[in-house]
Length: 154
Ligand code: CO
Image (cartoon, rainbow, N blue to C red; front, side, top):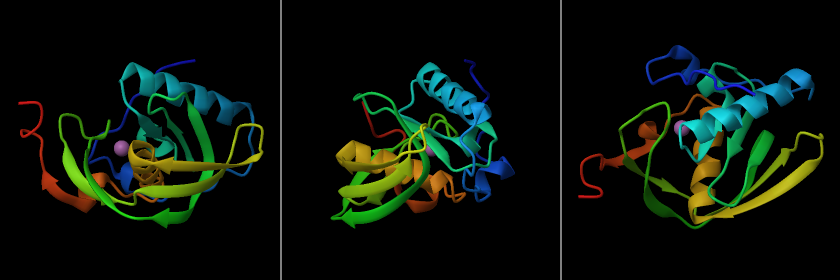
C-alpha cells in the first residue's frame, strides 16, 4: 500500500487514451490498492489510473457506500440528465458544473476477473462518468457549463 503522486492538469499523460487491462496480476492489484490509498488520502470520491501516471483502464470510486474497483469499465446504458458541480483531484481548488446522465449502468471486471454490473444514480452516476472520461483523456472541465469555484459554500 502506498500513496502515489497525482498528476495535475497540464500533464500530457492525463490527455492520453488508456489501454485495456489484459492481465489482472499482482502489479495491477497493487495499483488498485495504491489508487484507493491515494484517493482516500486526498479525500476524493474517485481516481482513475492515468491520474497516477498509469495508462490502463482502471478506476476506483467511493461515494460513501464503500470502495468500488472497476477494471475496463464500459458505460452500457444512460438515462436522463442532470447538471451538478464537480471537482477533480487533478484540478485542485476548482469546481465547475457539468451535464451528466442521471442514471448509468456500467459493466466492468472486478479484481477477481469477474464481470460485474454497477448501476449508479445521482452522485455515483456522475463519478462513474467522470472517472471513465479520464480513461479517454477527457477532463471534466472540457465539458464545463459554468465555473462555480467561488460560488459555493459562501
Ligand atoms: Co477527475
